[in-house]
Image 1 (cartoon, rainbow, N blue to C red):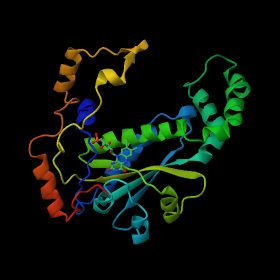
Image 2 (image 1 turned 30 degrees about the vertical axis):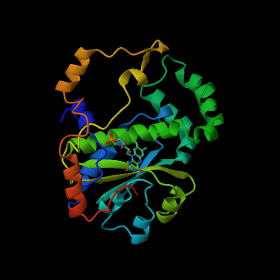
Image 3 (image 1 turned 90 degrees about the horizontal axis):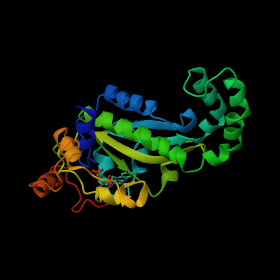
Length: 262
Ligand SMILES: Cc1cc2nc3c(=O)[nH]c(=O)nc-3n(C[C@H](O)[C@H](O)[C@H](O)COP(=O)(O)O)c2cc1C
């Protein structure tokens, strides 16, 4: 599957086949993609704990409630806990030196001295601030996004899940204070069709993006839209015909709660 089609095919797949295990190599490929994501200062703070439902303790699984669609955790053969290792920021100086060593940052003869005089003290001074929610969450988001596309390309379905009580999850899985879970991602083979009812609604393009001025919507060319329809990045809008029947059949097959909201 090409990249644009993977982007267009990605949905939050809420209905996973609980009886079909996920090959560990496919999870590894998701993690390999996450590792390659860009991090500010190359901090490598984006981390993951992969949990196989079959071998997790009941207490661990029970610690993973979601404020929305909680049944999804029970269906998923794999749950990835995506978290930030805040202590990674303590090594910011070393990460910057590596970037200079490989030619990704800086140039000229005096670049190492310059680095020690400018960026290393800056990152060291700002260390605690850099651990606060913001850029590090962005890093983790990019890692999750890359892993998500690799999951889709491999025929898997994923869905991010929030929690009203991350402390409970962190405790159940023995996370130290330096770690902060940001999101949990259910992973498995979709029990629903790949279309999953079609592209979910988004606000209009022109409302979201601008050119040169916030008053000026970014021009959306029909020609480009048509190209993206051809490459299947832009797909049919939800709901596709038969979606209600599809979800009702899934609800019955897996004895899911009547509304599936919580
Ligand atoms: C950070 C994040 C957290 C999310 N948390 C939940 C959640 O707790 N429960 C859930 O059912 N969906 C969750 N979602 C999925 C969104 O609700 C979903 O993106 C939205 O329904 C749009 O559908 P789509 O992803 O299929 O395009 C989350 C998505 C993101 C990116």
